[in-house]
Length: 279
Image (cartoon, rainbow, N blue to C red; front, top):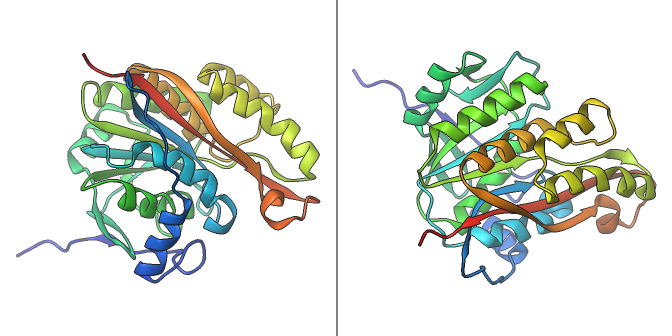
C-alpha cells in the first residue's frame, strides 16, 4: 500500500501574494532587478523580509535577483514562528510545500541528518501549518531558480543556544554541497518611522558586518529588534562555516515608505552573502 503524499498547501495565497499563478509570476518578475554578479564571487545566502509583497516584496526582490539562474540542489529556509508556540526547532515532516506556482519537494535526506544530529530539532507540522514567513519566500525561489529541494525550518525558540546549535549543525551538514541558505525576518515593528530607522540601523549593521555573535548580544539586550533574529543569526553562522566571506545589504526601508504613513511602521532589509568562486 502506498503511503499518502503529504503536501503543505498554500496558507496565505491571495493575502500576502497573488493567488493566480500568472499574476503571481508577473508580480515576482516585477520585483526582480538586473544586477551584475562579481566575477570572483558567488552568492550563497540571503536574508529577506516576509511581509505582504506590496510592502516588502521589492526589498526581497533585490536579494533574490542575485541568485537568479544559479544552481542549488537544496535551499534551506529558516523562519520564525508567528502563530504557534513550541519548543526547539521544527522541520516540516511532510513531503513537499505547494504554492500557486507548483510543488517544491522537501529534502528528506538532510532533514533526517539534521534531526539525528541535533536533539532540539524535530520533524513536525508545528510552525508550518499557517506560517507565512516561510511560505512567502517560495514563489521568489520558484521564479529565480530551476529545480531544487527545500529544507523548511521554523524556529519555535530563539535563544542563544538554539541559534548557535542550529547554525553550526547546518554548516556541518551542508559543507561542500550546493546549498542556498535563507533567513526570513522583518526588523522593528510599530514605531514611528524615525524611531524605527534608528533601531533598525543596529540589526542592519550586524548583518552588514557579518557579525552574528554581536547580533545575539544586541537581540538579548533589546538594542536590536528582528522577529526572525534567530533565523538570521543561525543562517549567518552556517554561512560562515560554508565559506561566505561577506554580507551585502542590498535594500532597506520601512512600510511607511510604501504607504506614506510614517506614524507606525515595520522595518525591512535584505542582504546577500557571498563566497569566493572556486578556482
